[in-house]
Image (cartoon, rainbow, N blue to C red):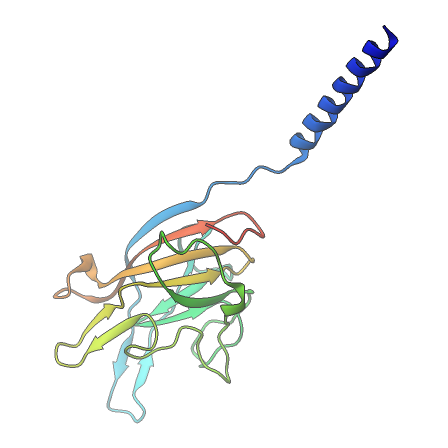
Amino acid sequence: MKTIKFFTLLTLFITFISCDKEDDTPSLVAVESKAITNLKAEQTSDYTTNPPTISGDYIKFSFETGAATTTDNWDIAFRGSTILVNGGEATAEDQPERTGNAAVYITSGTLASVEEVTTALLKTDSSVDGLAITTGSGNGWYNYDQSTHIITPIAGKVLVVKTNNGKYAKLEILSYYKDADTSSDSQHYTFNYIYQPNEGVTTF
């Protein structure tokens, strides 16, 4: 009888400890998926100077809020076809100060097929090595057609971002034109992204 009581108490104790451990395990928040349409990031170019003078505000964007921001808690910033990341150093005087620990790389695939961050590939902007997202046709996220002057996102390119506070996101740029119409205004970004809100989790 004592043996039965002992094993009964032991079973209850193990069950209690197991439940207690489960209660202590933090639950993960679901990844967030969002579409951004016509994010305006205009620049002006004066070709009467040598070199040409490029001006305009960089539009800073936060994956955490899913919107443009004027604060220092930005992850990437857009102006014309240039994309900055909030990590590293400015490469020009008119760029916003880098106050975060963000980094980025471009990989091949689809938004669905990129399931994990390869942290070894992450790069920050650098006054020595240049921008992490390289500018110029065929170098980064877009191609430029010299005959039509149309900028087209390179199919199968996904930007993987470490955010300014050390979380992760991935995005696919769909269009550089307002309402995705190449006969309309340029410098309007439409993109889909997925944000991983759980700290330290590198999978999507």
